[in-house]
Length: 107
Image 1 (cartoon, rainbow, N blue to C red):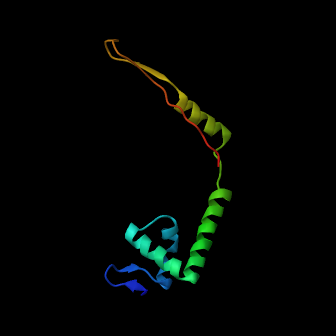
Image 2: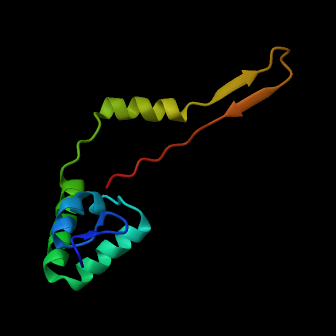
Image 3: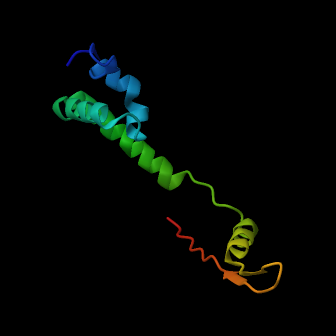
């Protein structure tokens, strides 16, 4: 592959893959460019290794480097979202009851 595809002026080679690696791993770029970059990485051991390393670093950061909201804040948010409300029209003829349920999944 050439360093830069002249038709689209988008990166598609080894040097350029390194330049766009972070955005690529984050899901950036359109499907066409993502496909070309993935194809290049599959056929280039050096780029494939670099891509794998970056994906592992991102996963490690996602799993290990996350702060949890303070317990009281989480509780207030859940309570606010769990609150039911009753509303009546000005003439009192319509009653609306709404309730929102929230589930918090810890990873």
